[in-house]
Each structure stands twice: as C-alpha cells, then as structure tokens.
Length: 632
Ligand SMILES: Nc1ncnc2c1ncn2[C@@H]1O[C@H](COP(=O)(O)OP(=O)(O)OP(=O)(O)O)[C@@H](O)[C@H]1O
Image (cartoon, rainbow, N blue to C red; front, side, top):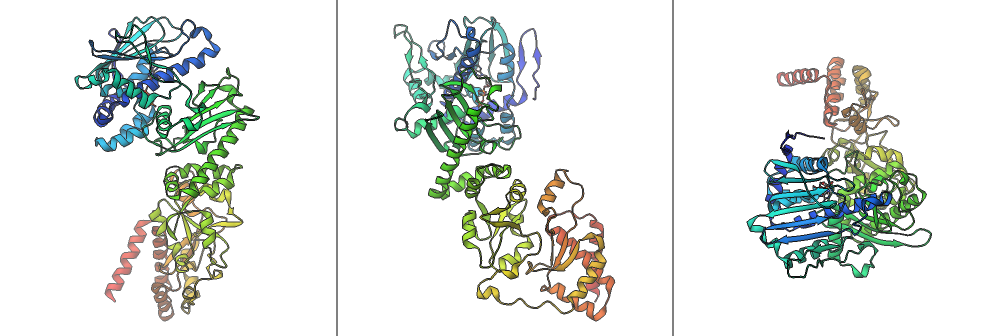
C-alpha cells in the first residue's frame, strides 16, 4: 500500500496521500451535474457499516446491545448549513479514520487516477467503473467532519478536512457507537438542506437499501423522525413489485457502481435448498477484472443478514464480474468465513447459480445477439478461463463463446463456423496473435483465404491455453494454421477456387536442398508451402511443438528461454522463388542462394513479429544484395 502521509502527531494533522488531493479535484469537477449522488455514496457506506456490525454481533452480541435497531438518520440543519448522515454501525477508531479516509488504500482509486484525463465527460465514465465513495462528499461540502466511535471501544474521534491537502484527527465525544458524516455545505449546495429534495433523492437512489433510513425532525415534526424507505430486502420481493429503475439503483448501491447493469437475474430457489439471488452483470468491465487478486464481490446473506462480500466459493472465478446478492436460508447464521470453505450447501448453491447464469447468457446470446456481443467484448476473455479449467460447464461455455473470424465482421460462434465448413474440411482452423491486425495479416492465412476456408482469429492470451485444453468442438479438432502441414488440398472449394494452382517451378527441389544446407540448424526443415499464395515464406510449428504465438508470450514473460526450431515453408508460386530457381539452374552459385535463404528466413521472422537475433547480419546481406542488383 502507498502511504505518504505526513503527520504532526501532537496536533493530529495529516497530509492527504498525494493522490487523494487529485482525486478530490477530479470528482468535484466531473461529477458536478450529478452531485446528488454524494448522498447515495454516503448512505451506501453507512449501510455497509451497519451490515458489518450486524455480522459481528452474531458472535459478539454485546457489541450491539443497548442500541440494536440499526439505521441511518439524515439531519439537515439550515441554520448551521450542515447536512449530517448518521449511522449506528461499526464506526471507526483513530487508525481506521486515517487509513480509510486519508489514504487511497483501494487499488481501484490509484488505477482510476492513472487513467483520469482531466476531461470531465471522460472522467465521469471512468468514475462509473471505479466508484468514488466517501470523497463524493466534497462535491457539495467545503468542509467535512466525521465523528465516529468504533463498536466495543470507548474513545471517539473527529476527522476533519476541507479537502485541500490536509486532514486532522482529534479526540472527541460521541455518546454511542457509529459515525456522523457532517457536511458543511457549499453556498451553491444549500438545496440539499430542503426536506423535499432530500426525500426525493433518497427515494430515487436508496429506496431499496435493506436498512431503514430516517429524516430527522427539523423542529416542526414534534421530535419524530420520518421514515424514508421501506427497507425490505429487495431480493426477497416478487419480481412484479420491482421496477427496472428499482433494480438499477439497487445494483448501483450494492456494487458502488455508476453504470447500468447489462443483465439482471432475480430468482428464488425452493426445495431441498432454499436461496434467493439478485445478480447483475455490469455493462462495463471493472478496472481490476484481470488483477490476480480480484475476488468475486457478490454479497452473501444468510436469512437477510450480511455475512461477507468475499466468498470465493459462491461462484467460479470465471464469473467474478457478477455483482449483487445471494441469500441462503440453509446456512447457519453464525457461519464464519473460514467455515464457508468446502461447505457442501455452498457447493450446491454454486452449481445452481452457475447453471442459471450461463443459461440466461445463452438465452441472451440467442435472442439479442448484438447486445450479447457487447457483453462478450467486455467479459468474454474471463468466461474463456472457464474453458481452460475443464469443468462440467465446458459445453455450455463453448456454445457461449464468440470469435472474430476471417469470414465475418461480426462475432461468430462455433456453431456458425461448423455450418460454414467446406466439404472435406476436417478441422476448425484458428490463428492466435497479439492483436486482431497482427493475426489478420499473417501470411499463414493466405491459402485459407484463397480457398475461402474460415479461420478464427484468437487474440486473448487465455486462448493459448484453453484451445489445447479443449481440443475439439463437436468432434471437430481445433487446429492452428501455423502448425503442421496445411492439408488444404483435401478441402473442396468452389470451381473458381479449385482452379489448379500453377505448377511449382522445375528445379525447386534443388533450391530447397541448398536452403537446408545453408540454414543448417537454424530451422527444423525447409519445405514447399501449401498455405502461401502471395508471401515468399513463413515459419510453421511442427505438430507437437509449442505454438509460435504461445512461445512468444512465454518468452515475453521470461517463462521460456529458447524456442523450438521451426519449419521454413517457401511459396513455390511466388516470383522471387521462381527467379531464384532459375538463377540456380543458370549459374549454380550456392553461396548466393545461401545468402538469399538467410534473408528469406529473417523476413519470415520479421513478418511473425519476432526480433532478429542478428540484425547486423540481416542488414549486411540486404545491402550486399541491393548493391549487386544495382550494379548488374
Ligand atoms: N459511515 C461509515 N462507517 C464506517 N466506516 C466507513 C463509513 N464510511 C466510510 N467508511 C470506511 O471508509 C472506507 C472508504 O470509503 P469509500 O466510500 O471511500 O470507499 P468504499 O466504500 O470502500 O469503496 P467504493 O465506495 O468505491 O466502492 C470504507 O471502505 C469504510 O471502511
């Protein structure tokens, strides 16, 4: 964790970690038109604090004794110009306040800052992915105080800041556990003191929070707090009672997100096991989707009591983008997080939830292919991790998978591919590459293109792993076009495609023999290519050797030192090979042909995106060749 705070211990004054200052600026600037969301963020935090305490109180009932009704109270003081969001949740002690509100402990915020542009619209979209939480308070307040007392402790503390570089933590008085977040509103934000405005905001954003929210009396209500929400657990309600807006706001609250959910899945399971789920697929990738430490963030409840939001067992890692709530009626309420591991009830729930989510995705893929393509572009690479794991959902995942291909601008499925296979075609062909452009321009595709044989273009690193692990789809093997002999002759094409290829030049065997002699150990073999129609040469992997792109990937990550030797395939129909064959026949100059062989090998390496081991030799040969051509 980064920590740069400077502290003058006596005064309790701290410098914000450098990034916090920048974050505050960006948030205040880019979220201006949606300022009201500050309240949602603070209410969500208060609700989380109450959830945490409710869970702890299962094993430590004394923590909650004396004040068992967990709630949030909003208090507007027009005279003082302050708005207070108070909760009787877990509270924070001095260290918590410094740690949670003064440093960017969450890797997400640091990642956000790296990407922030200063352009309000773009940053707003980014904030949507990251969430800004507590710091949203500074959109409406020029000074923020947090008065807090941690459950089970006797001391209270006051955190105070104007959001301009420093904050202060001092000893204070708070009668009971919990936190008051006190906002000293900016002159242009006094609208947030109006009761009607506050009621509307709470109803819009926080109606379905399973915790009661009250608006304190302003002196006219006879001391009575006014209840603003129903506080029923949304996920337990029948679907017919929930609006789309209600679902979306619940998603934003529970995921601390700003976007709209791409998919909402609400279900109840009854029978041997009883549980309910309200799950969401976000519309955008969370920033840390590929962070190895990222866990799923589903919230697990037992009989409406929050247990944890880091339960690895709830869904497989390839569904880690899901957000929302799962509520079990079968797990014991006092289950500890450790007990959740290897729990048979949880294992059954996991299987059920996984099946349900994949089933719903399948439906979307069929009914709304365009929208499904958006989903796939965001989360496809994660789902493919499930293929590599070889679990019992392999078939479902394969039918959900979508690919770029040489045959279509749209994403295609394996079923689409099978439907387009040519008579005589035995395999599903693919090529892997670092990018779509690199894969698409590979010379290995030429022969396939010429015969109109579709090739899948795989560009996610995970593709290198799941494809060999899966091996085949509906008994058709998945075969790389950069590997083995191309077998293109066996595939029947249209009449135009079947037009016999021009014969290889006479004497090509002699040329190949000389190439082998010159290149010796630099290649495994030299042979005539079936897959090339335009390029002079390409390198291919023998069956059983590592795929070329995978090898490059492993070398980049220093997981492999030396690569396997490759086969150099030369195109008998290209003009250069024709000219070389002629030259060999006419002059028989083996040395000259040897130099050409090296140049052609290096060219093939460059086309493959490799860096040459000996670029000096390449440049020397090329210059000599050019000089000779110019002089002749
Ligand atoms: N009312 C509160 N009571 C107790 N702790 C709180 C309260 N408000 C904030 N915190 C603590 O401060 C931390 C930082 O809050 P913040 O809203 O910035 O981020 P977050 O809620 O962790 O993440 P995000 O809102 O981005 O998903 C919280 O994780 C929590 O530990």
